[in-house]
Amino acid sequence: MKLFLSFTILICTLNSFVCPCKDKDLGEINSLQYDKYDIIFKGKVINIKKGNSSNTTTVIVEKFYKGTKIDTIVDILSTGAYGPCTINLKKDEIWLFYGYLKNEEIVTDLCTRTSSLNKNTKDTSSSVQRAKRDIIFLEKKVLTQK
Image (cartoon, rainbow, N blue to C red):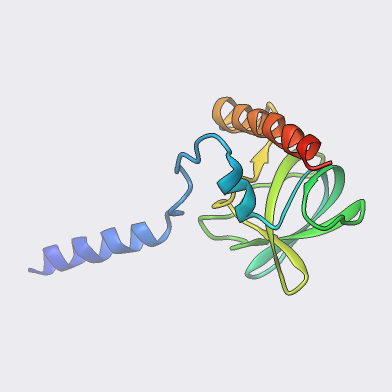
């Protein structure tokens, strides 16, 4: 009985350290997914300030795709600074950011479509290729809205 209980506790503990959407297939972007986000843009990471429960990343916006026009330089709050759903952003990397506006802050996490556009990332083949396909969709969306 003790062995069973110990095993159950171990499995539950391990599951709490796994991000529920880390390996989730987001599929191709479509209008329904696009509408889900408040803000979408491509940008270069210039600074990362680590906090206790979230990271604040400063980004130079290179291309704006959706939402209220924002400044050229913005701060993005990445929730779960050390948790399983943290986005591993690094200085000087280019990312496609999908975010929500909460209390006038831009918030994102691993459960959004936020993706690296850098070839040196661990999941280069899937993440970078998906981000490039997303950009094609977003460029078309921007053209149809003008």
